[in-house]
Image 1 (cartoon, helix red, strand yellow):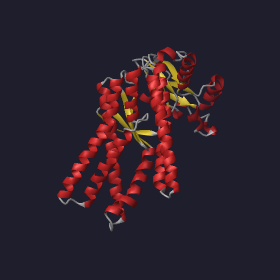
Image 2 (cartoon, helix red, strand yellow):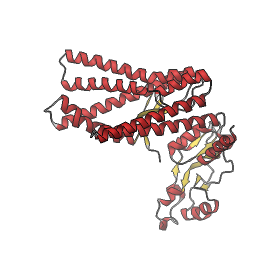
Image 3 (cartoon, helix red, strand yellow):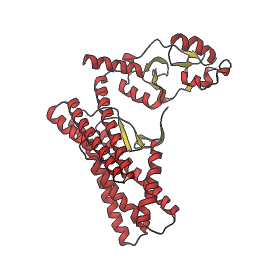
Image 4 (cartoon, one colour):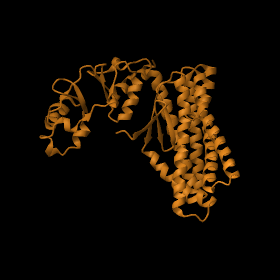
Length: 376
């Protein structure tokens, strides 16, 4: 199941919001309403603090989106495709489907984010000075001044030389330009990123022991996220390099077993799931047109006593863009698409929408493991 939902499109880039964003939205709003705004504006109604906290949090995430868009714009100018941007609990991430081809491109992409955040910090600082001199409402200057501070913090934090932070990518580009070894450069930058993550977690524990509980929890969360991101990013880089140049049609299964849309679920279970032991099957109409995908999880959602009277068409997943892929697409983009649709497989269709194959996450991971074992 996809844990993000489509929000909007900016500059042709789809923007999604992960469900974890709502967690940090509430946490940020609560923290500001309980601490920052009562401190700078004492005596105001509690609901007013909550309103200001919500406004600030929305504006802050808008600046994070601008940070990610700056990466994406540079990537697009250097012919690197962007599949989208996702906002989640610790900020945002731009989904670049291919590694930069040169250290110079990597450097320009990495620098763009911190440069954007620091520029925004300067803009909000200037606005704060202007509002102060104009005797603008304190609520307005308190928001712009804090936005200036927090964007400066974001910019400086991202310059820390630990992958996958922007500073880690800058470090990787420098090492890469010197050694010519992308894999080795990524490993060094990732290890530094992990080291910094462990430092943050240790610092968070120290804060908690000294009764700065909320700050300590935040540091531990951020440290844990960075440690996971450093490991995952390194693995993704290995995958991209290993699977580079391989198309979906090279490893897809061509002899696809399909089921008709009017088949009862009971027959589907007995004659297909038990017989072939696959976890899903493409669904076709009587004239052979592809209509959807039926999974074992979808069948389990239907009460067993209704399997005999319920047809496949009532339980299947309708065919959508996130369920299909072209045969000439690269397998890493297929893997990314599978992660988004939560199904673990894609239907391969030609230009006319005809089903010509199927590819699963297991197929790709098996190929990756084989190539890693053979060091090819």
